[in-house]
Length: 501
Ligand code: FAD
Ligand code: SF4
Image (cartoon, rainbow, N blue to C red; front, side, top):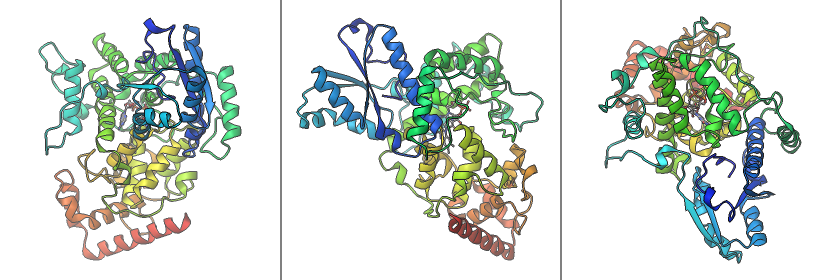
Protein backbone atom coordinates (compact mmCIF):
# COMPACT_ATOMS: atom_id res chain seq x y z
CA UNK A 1 0.00 0.00 0.00
CA UNK A 2 1.08 3.58 -0.70
CA UNK A 3 1.56 4.32 3.01
CA UNK A 4 3.62 1.17 3.66
CA UNK A 5 6.83 1.97 1.81
CA UNK A 6 9.01 0.33 4.43
CA UNK A 7 12.63 -0.59 3.81
CA UNK A 8 11.99 -3.56 6.11
CA UNK A 9 8.47 -4.51 5.07
CA UNK A 10 7.52 -7.69 6.93
CA UNK A 11 6.15 -9.34 3.78
CA UNK A 12 9.45 -8.88 1.93
CA UNK A 13 11.31 -11.91 3.22
CA UNK A 14 14.71 -11.86 1.43
CA UNK A 15 15.00 -15.65 1.79
CA UNK A 16 11.94 -16.01 -0.45
CA UNK A 17 12.78 -13.33 -2.99
CA UNK A 18 12.58 -15.70 -5.97
CA UNK A 19 9.08 -16.97 -5.07
CA UNK A 20 7.43 -13.61 -4.39
CA UNK A 21 5.91 -10.98 -6.62
CA UNK A 22 5.51 -7.58 -5.00
CA UNK A 23 2.19 -6.01 -6.03
CA UNK A 24 1.89 -2.24 -5.71
CA UNK A 25 -1.37 -0.61 -6.75
CA UNK A 26 -2.08 3.03 -7.52
CA UNK A 27 -5.83 3.16 -6.91
CA UNK A 28 -7.32 6.22 -8.60
CA UNK A 29 -10.40 6.41 -6.35
CA UNK A 30 -8.22 6.46 -3.23
CA UNK A 31 -6.80 9.78 -4.39
CA UNK A 32 -10.21 11.31 -5.10
CA UNK A 33 -11.84 10.58 -1.73
CA UNK A 34 -11.09 14.17 -0.63
CA UNK A 35 -9.76 17.22 -2.50
CA UNK A 36 -6.30 16.27 -1.17
CA UNK A 37 -3.47 18.78 -1.33
CA UNK A 38 -1.71 18.33 -4.66
CA UNK A 39 1.69 18.13 -2.94
CA UNK A 40 0.44 15.21 -0.87
CA UNK A 41 -0.78 13.26 -3.90
CA UNK A 42 2.50 14.01 -5.67
CA UNK A 43 4.52 12.89 -2.65
CA UNK A 44 2.70 9.57 -2.29
CA UNK A 45 2.70 8.72 -6.01
CA UNK A 46 6.33 9.67 -6.50
CA UNK A 47 7.39 7.76 -3.37
CA UNK A 48 5.45 4.67 -4.52
CA UNK A 49 7.08 4.71 -7.95
CA UNK A 50 10.54 5.24 -6.51
CA UNK A 51 9.92 2.43 -4.02
CA UNK A 52 9.00 0.07 -6.87
CA UNK A 53 12.12 1.13 -8.79
CA UNK A 54 14.33 0.54 -5.73
CA UNK A 55 12.81 -2.91 -5.17
CA UNK A 56 13.40 -3.88 -8.81
CA UNK A 57 16.98 -2.74 -8.53
CA UNK A 58 17.37 -4.90 -5.43
CA UNK A 59 16.25 -7.95 -7.43
CA UNK A 60 12.53 -8.13 -6.56
CA UNK A 61 9.92 -8.93 -9.14
CA UNK A 62 7.42 -6.05 -8.99
CA UNK A 63 3.97 -5.80 -10.53
CA UNK A 64 3.17 -2.06 -10.39
CA UNK A 65 -0.43 -1.40 -11.39
CA UNK A 66 -2.82 1.47 -11.90
CA UNK A 67 -6.47 0.64 -11.31
CA UNK A 68 -9.72 2.29 -10.34
CA UNK A 69 -9.71 0.67 -6.91
CA UNK A 70 -7.20 -1.28 -4.85
CA UNK A 71 -9.37 -4.41 -5.06
CA UNK A 72 -9.76 -4.12 -8.85
CA UNK A 73 -5.97 -3.94 -9.22
CA UNK A 74 -5.49 -6.84 -6.85
CA UNK A 75 -8.05 -9.03 -8.60
CA UNK A 76 -6.45 -8.38 -11.99
CA UNK A 77 -3.04 -9.29 -10.58
CA UNK A 78 -4.29 -12.49 -8.93
CA UNK A 79 -6.16 -13.61 -12.06
CA UNK A 80 -3.13 -13.03 -14.27
CA UNK A 81 -0.63 -14.66 -11.93
CA UNK A 82 -2.79 -17.41 -10.41
CA UNK A 83 -1.17 -16.76 -7.04
CA UNK A 84 -2.06 -19.11 -4.20
CA UNK A 85 -1.19 -16.86 -1.36
CA UNK A 86 -1.42 -13.16 -0.67
CA UNK A 87 0.69 -11.67 2.12
CA UNK A 88 -0.10 -8.17 3.34
CA UNK A 89 0.76 -6.01 6.30
CA UNK A 90 -2.20 -4.79 8.37
CA UNK A 91 -3.29 -1.33 7.19
CA UNK A 92 -2.88 1.70 9.45
CA UNK A 93 -6.34 3.05 8.60
CA UNK A 94 -9.46 1.44 9.96
CA UNK A 95 -11.52 1.17 6.73
CA UNK A 96 -8.60 -0.45 4.89
CA UNK A 97 -8.01 -2.85 7.79
CA UNK A 98 -11.70 -3.82 7.72
CA UNK A 99 -11.54 -4.61 4.03
CA UNK A 100 -8.37 -6.66 4.54
CA UNK A 101 -10.25 -8.78 7.03
CA UNK A 102 -13.01 -9.47 4.50
CA UNK A 103 -10.64 -9.77 1.57
CA UNK A 104 -10.47 -13.55 1.32
CA UNK A 105 -14.27 -13.79 1.15
CA UNK A 106 -14.74 -10.95 -1.27
CA UNK A 107 -12.11 -12.47 -3.58
CA UNK A 108 -13.90 -15.80 -3.35
CA UNK A 109 -17.13 -14.11 -4.45
CA UNK A 110 -15.19 -13.02 -7.54
CA UNK A 111 -14.16 -16.70 -7.96
CA UNK A 112 -10.58 -16.04 -6.92
CA UNK A 113 -9.39 -18.57 -4.39
CA UNK A 114 -6.38 -17.31 -2.51
CA UNK A 115 -5.17 -17.65 1.05
CA UNK A 116 -4.82 -14.19 2.59
CA UNK A 117 -2.29 -13.71 5.35
CA UNK A 118 -2.32 -10.38 7.22
CA UNK A 119 0.93 -9.69 9.05
CA UNK A 120 0.98 -7.37 12.08
CA UNK A 121 1.70 -3.74 11.31
CA UNK A 122 5.34 -2.86 12.05
CA UNK A 123 5.09 0.84 11.21
CA UNK A 124 4.07 1.74 14.73
CA UNK A 125 5.66 0.68 17.99
CA UNK A 126 2.19 0.43 19.55
CA UNK A 127 1.56 -2.45 17.11
CA UNK A 128 4.35 -4.36 18.87
CA UNK A 129 3.81 -3.26 22.47
CA UNK A 130 1.13 -1.13 24.06
CA UNK A 131 0.75 -0.40 27.76
CA UNK A 132 -2.23 -2.14 29.32
CA UNK A 133 -5.29 -0.06 30.09
CA UNK A 134 -6.77 -0.71 33.52
CA UNK A 135 -10.55 -1.24 33.50
CA UNK A 136 -12.44 1.99 34.22
CA UNK A 137 -9.20 4.02 34.36
CA UNK A 138 -8.21 6.34 31.55
CA UNK A 139 -4.72 5.70 30.20
CA UNK A 140 -3.42 9.25 29.75
CA UNK A 141 -0.66 10.08 27.28
CA UNK A 142 1.96 10.76 29.99
CA UNK A 143 1.77 7.21 31.43
CA UNK A 144 1.49 5.66 27.98
CA UNK A 145 4.66 7.54 27.02
CA UNK A 146 6.61 6.50 30.13
CA UNK A 147 5.69 2.86 29.58
CA UNK A 148 6.80 3.07 25.94
CA UNK A 149 10.12 4.62 26.92
CA UNK A 150 10.72 1.90 29.47
CA UNK A 151 9.72 -0.93 27.15
CA UNK A 152 11.86 0.27 24.25
CA UNK A 153 14.71 1.50 26.48
CA UNK A 154 14.68 5.07 25.18
CA UNK A 155 16.34 7.74 27.34
CA UNK A 156 16.37 5.21 30.19
CA UNK A 157 19.36 4.61 32.46
CA UNK A 158 20.58 1.11 33.45
CA UNK A 159 18.77 1.53 36.82
CA UNK A 160 15.46 1.94 34.96
CA UNK A 161 15.16 5.66 35.77
CA UNK A 162 14.61 8.34 33.10
CA UNK A 163 17.80 9.91 31.76
CA UNK A 164 18.45 13.22 33.52
CA UNK A 165 16.14 12.23 36.39
CA UNK A 166 12.91 13.66 34.96
CA UNK A 167 10.36 12.34 32.47
CA UNK A 168 9.47 15.78 31.27
CA UNK A 169 11.36 19.01 30.48
CA UNK A 170 8.39 21.13 29.48
CA UNK A 171 9.37 23.86 31.95
CA UNK A 172 12.58 24.46 29.93
CA UNK A 173 10.83 24.23 26.58
CA UNK A 174 8.00 26.17 24.99
CA UNK A 175 9.39 29.68 24.69
CA UNK A 176 8.09 32.29 22.24
CA UNK A 177 10.41 32.85 19.27
CA UNK A 178 12.72 35.77 19.95
CA UNK A 179 14.53 35.74 16.60
CA UNK A 180 17.94 35.24 18.25
CA UNK A 181 18.67 31.98 16.42
CA UNK A 182 17.84 31.92 12.73
CA UNK A 183 16.33 28.60 11.58
CA UNK A 184 18.59 27.00 8.92
CA UNK A 185 17.41 26.43 5.36
CA UNK A 186 15.48 23.19 4.86
CA UNK A 187 16.92 20.45 2.67
CA UNK A 188 15.40 20.52 -0.81
CA UNK A 189 15.27 17.61 -3.25
CA UNK A 190 15.05 18.62 -6.90
CA UNK A 191 12.39 16.54 -8.72
CA UNK A 192 13.92 13.83 -10.94
CA UNK A 193 12.23 12.39 -14.06
CA UNK A 194 9.86 10.17 -12.05
CA UNK A 195 8.74 13.07 -9.87
CA UNK A 196 8.44 15.46 -12.83
CA UNK A 197 6.08 13.01 -14.55
CA UNK A 198 4.01 12.69 -11.37
CA UNK A 199 3.81 16.48 -10.95
CA UNK A 200 2.35 17.04 -14.40
CA UNK A 201 -0.05 14.08 -13.99
CA UNK A 202 -1.33 15.52 -10.70
CA UNK A 203 -1.84 19.00 -12.15
CA UNK A 204 -3.79 17.50 -15.07
CA UNK A 205 -5.83 14.92 -13.15
CA UNK A 206 -6.66 16.99 -10.07
CA UNK A 207 -6.93 20.63 -11.18
CA UNK A 208 -9.47 21.53 -8.49
CA UNK A 209 -7.64 19.98 -5.56
CA UNK A 210 -6.15 22.04 -2.74
CA UNK A 211 -2.89 23.93 -3.44
CA UNK A 212 -0.44 23.37 -6.24
CA UNK A 213 2.58 21.22 -7.03
CA UNK A 214 4.71 24.33 -7.75
CA UNK A 215 7.98 24.30 -5.83
CA UNK A 216 7.70 20.61 -4.92
CA UNK A 217 11.00 19.59 -3.33
CA UNK A 218 10.04 16.94 -0.78
CA UNK A 219 12.03 13.73 -0.17
CA UNK A 220 10.54 10.83 -2.11
CA UNK A 221 13.02 7.98 -1.53
CA UNK A 222 14.36 6.18 1.51
CA UNK A 223 17.81 7.72 0.94
CA UNK A 224 16.34 11.23 0.79
CA UNK A 225 14.21 10.56 3.88
CA UNK A 226 17.33 9.50 5.81
CA UNK A 227 19.10 12.64 4.59
CA UNK A 228 16.17 14.73 5.90
CA UNK A 229 16.35 13.01 9.27
CA UNK A 230 20.10 13.63 9.45
CA UNK A 231 19.65 17.27 8.51
CA UNK A 232 17.07 17.77 11.26
CA UNK A 233 19.25 16.07 13.90
CA UNK A 234 22.30 18.12 12.94
CA UNK A 235 20.76 21.52 12.32
CA UNK A 236 17.40 21.92 14.09
CA UNK A 237 16.95 19.40 16.92
CA UNK A 238 19.00 21.45 19.41
CA UNK A 239 16.42 24.26 19.24
CA UNK A 240 13.37 22.02 18.82
CA UNK A 241 12.51 22.00 22.55
CA UNK A 242 12.76 25.70 23.40
CA UNK A 243 10.75 26.81 20.35
CA UNK A 244 8.40 23.82 20.09
CA UNK A 245 5.28 25.91 20.74
CA UNK A 246 6.41 29.18 19.17
CA UNK A 247 4.72 30.62 16.08
CA UNK A 248 6.26 33.16 13.74
CA UNK A 249 4.90 35.15 10.80
CA UNK A 250 8.16 34.87 8.83
CA UNK A 251 9.52 31.50 9.98
CA UNK A 252 6.90 28.88 9.13
CA UNK A 253 8.89 25.80 10.15
CA UNK A 254 11.15 27.21 12.89
CA UNK A 255 12.96 24.14 14.31
CA UNK A 256 10.35 21.46 13.59
CA UNK A 257 11.39 18.24 11.88
CA UNK A 258 8.95 18.01 8.92
CA UNK A 259 9.29 14.24 9.26
CA UNK A 260 5.57 13.40 9.66
CA UNK A 261 4.85 12.80 5.94
CA UNK A 262 7.86 10.46 5.75
CA UNK A 263 6.96 8.52 8.89
CA UNK A 264 3.35 8.25 7.75
CA UNK A 265 4.19 6.56 4.45
CA UNK A 266 6.89 4.32 5.91
CA UNK A 267 10.00 5.97 4.43
CA UNK A 268 11.16 6.39 8.03
CA UNK A 269 10.39 4.21 11.04
CA UNK A 270 9.68 5.69 14.48
CA UNK A 271 12.35 3.72 16.35
CA UNK A 272 15.20 4.71 14.06
CA UNK A 273 14.12 8.35 14.29
CA UNK A 274 14.08 8.50 18.09
CA UNK A 275 17.25 6.43 18.38
CA UNK A 276 19.04 8.93 16.11
CA UNK A 277 17.86 11.73 18.42
CA UNK A 278 19.04 9.85 21.51
CA UNK A 279 22.49 9.29 19.99
CA UNK A 280 22.71 13.05 19.35
CA UNK A 281 22.18 13.59 23.09
CA UNK A 282 24.55 10.82 24.22
CA UNK A 283 27.32 12.16 22.00
CA UNK A 284 26.92 15.63 23.50
CA UNK A 285 25.57 17.27 20.34
CA UNK A 286 22.06 18.16 21.50
CA UNK A 287 20.74 19.08 24.98
CA UNK A 288 18.43 16.63 26.76
CA UNK A 289 15.30 18.86 26.94
CA UNK A 290 15.14 19.11 23.15
CA UNK A 291 15.75 15.38 22.65
CA UNK A 292 13.21 14.41 25.31
CA UNK A 293 10.65 16.83 23.82
CA UNK A 294 11.12 15.26 20.39
CA UNK A 295 11.05 11.64 21.64
CA UNK A 296 7.80 12.50 23.49
CA UNK A 297 6.21 13.67 20.23
CA UNK A 298 7.04 10.46 18.39
CA UNK A 299 6.71 7.60 20.86
CA UNK A 300 4.38 9.55 23.14
CA UNK A 301 1.87 11.52 21.10
CA UNK A 302 2.16 9.79 17.73
CA UNK A 303 1.88 6.27 19.12
CA UNK A 304 -0.83 7.28 21.61
CA UNK A 305 -2.88 8.78 18.77
CA UNK A 306 -2.57 5.58 16.72
CA UNK A 307 -3.45 3.45 19.74
CA UNK A 308 -6.53 5.61 20.49
CA UNK A 309 -7.67 5.48 16.90
CA UNK A 310 -7.84 1.69 16.82
CA UNK A 311 -9.32 1.63 20.30
CA UNK A 312 -12.12 4.08 19.50
CA UNK A 313 -13.04 3.44 15.88
CA UNK A 314 -15.49 3.17 14.14
CA UNK A 315 -17.55 5.73 16.07
CA UNK A 316 -14.73 8.26 16.51
CA UNK A 317 -15.34 10.60 13.59
CA UNK A 318 -19.05 11.05 14.43
CA UNK A 319 -18.45 12.22 18.01
CA UNK A 320 -19.75 15.69 18.83
CA UNK A 321 -19.79 16.12 22.59
CA UNK A 322 -20.32 19.93 22.47
CA UNK A 323 -23.17 19.54 19.99
CA UNK A 324 -21.42 21.92 17.62
CA UNK A 325 -23.23 22.41 14.31
CA UNK A 326 -21.94 25.61 12.66
CA UNK A 327 -20.56 25.24 9.11
CA UNK A 328 -16.85 25.50 8.40
CA UNK A 329 -16.22 29.13 7.34
CA UNK A 330 -15.28 29.63 3.69
CA UNK A 331 -11.98 31.33 4.65
CA UNK A 332 -10.58 27.93 5.69
CA UNK A 333 -10.35 27.21 1.94
CA UNK A 334 -8.78 30.49 0.81
CA UNK A 335 -7.34 32.29 3.86
CA UNK A 336 -9.40 35.41 3.21
CA UNK A 337 -10.08 36.72 6.71
CA UNK A 338 -9.02 39.78 8.66
CA UNK A 339 -7.78 37.60 11.53
CA UNK A 340 -4.05 37.70 10.86
CA UNK A 341 -3.21 34.44 12.65
CA UNK A 342 -5.73 32.46 10.61
CA UNK A 343 -4.90 34.28 7.36
CA UNK A 344 -1.16 33.61 7.77
CA UNK A 345 -1.51 29.98 8.79
CA UNK A 346 -4.09 29.04 6.15
CA UNK A 347 -2.23 30.83 3.34
CA UNK A 348 0.95 29.01 4.31
CA UNK A 349 -0.88 25.70 4.51
CA UNK A 350 -2.53 26.07 1.08
CA UNK A 351 0.89 26.80 -0.39
CA UNK A 352 2.93 24.06 1.26
CA UNK A 353 0.55 21.46 2.76
CA UNK A 354 2.23 22.02 6.15
CA UNK A 355 1.90 24.00 9.33
CA UNK A 356 3.38 22.96 12.63
CA UNK A 357 1.55 21.46 15.59
CA UNK A 358 0.70 24.56 17.61
CA UNK A 359 -0.78 26.27 14.57
CA UNK A 360 -2.93 23.19 13.94
CA UNK A 361 -3.99 23.02 17.58
CA UNK A 362 -4.12 26.56 18.94
CA UNK A 363 -5.03 28.54 15.83
CA UNK A 364 -7.02 26.29 13.49
CA UNK A 365 -8.80 23.75 15.68
CA UNK A 366 -9.04 26.15 18.64
CA UNK A 367 -11.07 28.45 16.38
CA UNK A 368 -13.23 25.50 15.32
CA UNK A 369 -13.85 24.59 18.95
CA UNK A 370 -14.69 28.14 20.06
CA UNK A 371 -16.88 28.90 17.04
CA UNK A 372 -18.79 25.62 17.47
CA UNK A 373 -18.01 24.19 14.02
CA UNK A 374 -19.31 20.71 13.21
CA UNK A 375 -16.40 18.36 14.08
CA UNK A 376 -16.74 16.17 11.01
CA UNK A 377 -16.43 19.21 8.73
CA UNK A 378 -13.25 20.28 10.51
CA UNK A 379 -11.93 16.72 10.28
CA UNK A 380 -12.57 16.52 6.53
CA UNK A 381 -10.90 19.88 6.01
CA UNK A 382 -7.73 18.70 7.82
CA UNK A 383 -7.77 15.49 5.79
CA UNK A 384 -7.92 17.50 2.57
CA UNK A 385 -5.36 20.18 3.26
CA UNK A 386 -2.34 18.60 4.97
CA UNK A 387 0.41 16.69 3.18
CA UNK A 388 0.75 14.28 6.12
CA UNK A 389 -2.99 13.64 6.64
CA UNK A 390 -4.35 10.11 7.09
CA UNK A 391 -7.49 9.04 8.88
CA UNK A 392 -5.62 7.32 11.77
CA UNK A 393 -3.81 10.54 12.68
CA UNK A 394 -6.31 13.25 11.74
CA UNK A 395 -9.39 11.86 13.49
CA UNK A 396 -7.92 11.49 17.02
CA UNK A 397 -6.04 14.79 16.68
CA UNK A 398 -9.02 16.78 15.40
CA UNK A 399 -12.07 15.12 16.96
CA UNK A 400 -10.09 14.19 20.08
CA UNK A 401 -7.29 16.59 20.91
CA UNK A 402 -8.28 19.70 18.93
CA UNK A 403 -12.05 19.85 19.36
CA UNK A 404 -12.45 17.61 22.41
CA UNK A 405 -15.57 16.29 20.69
CA UNK A 406 -14.76 12.88 22.19
CA UNK A 407 -15.63 14.14 25.68
CA UNK A 408 -11.98 14.23 26.75
CA UNK A 409 -10.71 10.76 25.85
CA UNK A 410 -7.54 11.78 23.96
CA UNK A 411 -6.75 15.02 25.80
CA UNK A 412 -7.12 15.77 29.48
CA UNK A 413 -8.80 19.15 28.80
CA UNK A 414 -10.22 21.10 25.87
CA UNK A 415 -7.44 23.12 24.19
CA UNK A 416 -9.51 26.30 24.29
CA UNK A 417 -7.59 29.57 24.41
CA UNK A 418 -8.21 33.27 23.90
CA UNK A 419 -6.15 35.70 21.82
CA UNK A 420 -3.84 36.17 24.82
CA UNK A 421 -2.26 32.74 24.18
CA UNK A 422 -1.71 33.44 20.47
CA UNK A 423 -0.29 36.85 21.33
CA UNK A 424 2.12 35.32 23.86
CA UNK A 425 3.38 32.58 21.54
CA UNK A 426 3.49 34.43 18.19
CA UNK A 427 4.00 37.75 16.45
CA UNK A 428 0.72 37.47 14.49
CA UNK A 429 -1.21 39.96 16.62
CA UNK A 430 1.17 42.81 15.72
CA UNK A 431 -0.07 42.72 12.15
CA UNK A 432 -3.75 42.26 12.96
CA UNK A 433 -6.64 44.67 12.77
CA UNK A 434 -8.00 43.23 16.03
CA UNK A 435 -6.53 43.59 19.52
CA UNK A 436 -5.79 40.53 21.64
CA UNK A 437 -6.19 42.73 24.72
CA UNK A 438 -9.83 43.68 24.15
CA UNK A 439 -12.64 41.29 25.14
CA UNK A 440 -15.64 42.71 23.32
CA UNK A 441 -16.54 45.47 20.85
CA UNK A 442 -15.43 46.15 17.26
CA UNK A 443 -11.67 45.98 17.95
CA UNK A 444 -11.87 42.85 20.11
CA UNK A 445 -9.99 39.77 18.94
CA UNK A 446 -12.65 37.22 17.90
CA UNK A 447 -10.77 34.50 19.83
CA UNK A 448 -11.51 36.57 22.97
CA UNK A 449 -15.28 36.91 22.83
CA UNK A 450 -15.60 33.39 21.37
CA UNK A 451 -13.48 32.03 24.25
CA UNK A 452 -15.50 33.73 26.98
CA UNK A 453 -18.72 32.79 25.24
CA UNK A 454 -17.52 29.16 25.18
CA UNK A 455 -16.77 29.25 28.91
CA UNK A 456 -20.16 30.80 29.67
CA UNK A 457 -22.01 28.32 27.49
CA UNK A 458 -20.30 25.26 28.96
CA UNK A 459 -19.53 26.57 32.45
CA UNK A 460 -21.02 23.66 34.40
CA UNK A 461 -19.22 21.00 32.34
CA UNK A 462 -15.89 22.83 32.32
CA UNK A 463 -15.95 23.47 36.07
CA UNK A 464 -15.92 19.71 36.62
CA UNK A 465 -12.56 19.44 34.80
CA UNK A 466 -9.70 20.16 37.26
CA UNK A 467 -7.50 21.48 34.44
CA UNK A 468 -10.18 23.97 33.32
CA UNK A 469 -11.23 25.12 36.79
CA UNK A 470 -8.90 28.17 36.94
CA UNK A 471 -10.07 29.33 33.51
CA UNK A 472 -13.72 29.12 34.54
CA UNK A 473 -12.92 31.07 37.72
CA UNK A 474 -11.94 33.95 35.41
CA UNK A 475 -15.64 34.38 34.65
CA UNK A 476 -16.06 35.92 38.13
CA UNK A 477 -14.41 39.08 36.81
CA UNK A 478 -16.96 39.56 34.04
CA UNK A 479 -20.07 41.45 35.10
CA UNK A 480 -23.52 40.32 33.89
CA UNK A 481 -23.92 43.19 31.39
CA UNK A 482 -20.54 42.39 29.77
CA UNK A 483 -21.42 38.71 29.67
CA UNK A 484 -24.50 39.60 27.67
CA UNK A 485 -22.47 41.76 25.25
CA UNK A 486 -19.92 38.94 24.77
CA UNK A 487 -22.60 36.35 24.12
CA UNK A 488 -24.44 38.61 21.66
CA UNK A 489 -21.23 39.47 19.79
CA UNK A 490 -20.22 35.81 19.60
CA UNK A 491 -23.63 34.74 18.27
CA UNK A 492 -23.66 37.49 15.61
CA UNK A 493 -20.07 36.67 14.60
CA UNK A 494 -20.80 32.95 14.19
CA UNK A 495 -24.01 33.67 12.22
CA UNK A 496 -22.09 36.01 9.90
CA UNK A 497 -19.40 33.36 9.38
CA UNK A 498 -22.06 30.86 8.37
CA UNK A 499 -23.84 33.19 5.99
CA UNK A 500 -20.52 34.12 4.35
CA UNK A 501 -19.93 30.43 3.59
P1 FAD B 1 7.49 17.92 14.83
O1 FAD B 1 7.00 19.06 15.62
O2 FAD B 1 8.88 17.96 14.36
O3 FAD B 1 7.25 16.62 15.74
C1 FAD B 1 7.92 15.39 15.51
C2 FAD B 1 6.98 14.29 15.14
O4 FAD B 1 6.13 13.96 16.22
C3 FAD B 1 6.05 14.57 13.99
O5 FAD B 1 6.69 14.38 12.76
C4 FAD B 1 4.95 13.55 14.22
O6 FAD B 1 5.28 12.33 13.61
C5 FAD B 1 4.96 13.36 15.72
N1 FAD B 1 3.81 13.98 16.38
C6 FAD B 1 3.83 15.02 17.24
N2 FAD B 1 2.60 15.25 17.73
C7 FAD B 1 1.80 14.35 17.17
C8 FAD B 1 0.41 14.08 17.28
N3 FAD B 1 -0.39 14.81 18.07
N4 FAD B 1 -0.09 13.10 16.53
C9 FAD B 1 0.70 12.36 15.72
N5 FAD B 1 2.01 12.56 15.59
C10 FAD B 1 2.55 13.55 16.31
N6 FAD B 1 0.09 14.73 12.29
C11 FAD B 1 0.17 14.07 11.13
O7 FAD B 1 1.13 13.32 10.93
N7 FAD B 1 -0.79 14.18 10.17
C12 FAD B 1 -1.88 15.00 10.35
O8 FAD B 1 -2.72 15.11 9.46
C13 FAD B 1 -2.00 15.70 11.59
N8 FAD B 1 -3.07 16.51 11.82
C14 FAD B 1 -3.16 17.15 13.03
C15 FAD B 1 -4.30 17.93 13.29
C16 FAD B 1 -4.44 18.58 14.50
C17 FAD B 1 -5.68 19.38 14.81
C18 FAD B 1 -3.42 18.47 15.47
C19 FAD B 1 -3.57 19.13 16.79
C20 FAD B 1 -2.30 17.70 15.22
C21 FAD B 1 -2.16 17.04 14.00
N9 FAD B 1 -1.03 16.24 13.72
C22 FAD B 1 -0.96 15.56 12.54
C23 FAD B 1 0.04 16.07 14.72
C24 FAD B 1 1.21 17.08 14.57
O9 FAD B 1 0.69 18.38 14.53
C25 FAD B 1 2.02 16.80 13.32
O10 FAD B 1 2.46 15.47 13.32
C26 FAD B 1 3.26 17.70 13.25
O11 FAD B 1 2.89 19.04 13.29
C27 FAD B 1 4.02 17.37 11.97
O12 FAD B 1 5.06 18.27 11.75
P2 FAD B 1 6.58 17.92 12.08
O13 FAD B 1 6.91 16.63 11.41
O14 FAD B 1 7.40 19.10 11.73
O15 FAD B 1 6.48 17.67 13.62
FE1 SF4 C 1 -5.41 36.27 15.82
FE2 SF4 C 1 -6.71 37.76 17.61
FE3 SF4 C 1 -4.09 38.00 17.37
FE4 SF4 C 1 -5.67 38.88 15.43
S1 SF4 C 1 -5.55 39.63 17.52
S2 SF4 C 1 -3.80 37.67 15.17
S3 SF4 C 1 -7.32 37.37 15.47
S4 SF4 C 1 -5.21 36.18 18.02
